[in-house]
Image (cartoon, rainbow, N blue to C red):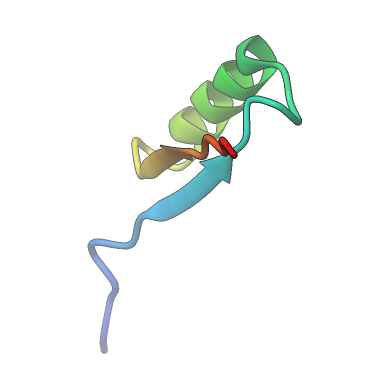
Length: 47
């Protein structure tokens, strides 16, 4: 039986769209649920 051992979730986040405080709280909750398997990508867009 095959078992995935190292699956991680990459979540992209744009500070201009969502409050950074809310994003960090959401990420912390997801991190707890997934046992520390979240990676955040902060997307900054400058023109």
